[in-house]
Length: 250
Image (cartoon, helix red, strand yellow):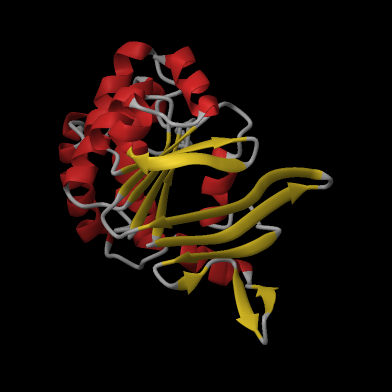
């Protein structure tokens, strides 16, 4: 589902990603862990071309993301084509990014109606099912300001899933939440994983990573330092950099 080949990203003279190779199979959950500034969120944003890579190749489901290749040279695709690629890739951010002037159900049906051309009544019926799945059917007509942070994030996940993406990206989805609200969001993500959704998650929630991830990738200073089965990396890290990071967390 994701095939990253020697992906590099620089901002001027600052190299943030220094040759990242990651493959994620369909239905797999991969958690990216590591200290702040290691390039995790930048890499995630490259996967749907919110950030433009400086070198390398990035494919999602066999399609080159953000560029077309001709005679070995990459040409950036139009914003319209990039938007079409993004419509198949769900993204959930740290800050919930809901439209404040739209209710929960209106937030969810906006893209299916306006991007995918779904009939409003059909989109609403699907949206209500998704709200039910995230435990918020009773909040369908509430505005974001009337919801807790955890509820807003669950609406944001439902909104991403409403587009029927083939891949879901989560950028530290619980880091802006009060500790007691973290569990309700992680439960929704667990359910998505159980349903076979391919997911890449940037997270500091080691319990979630250990339990749900198929693979954990530890990044530091723009490199992949260590990767492997979740329990192996978290419970028995081999690299001293990984050991130091995990001992500061666990």
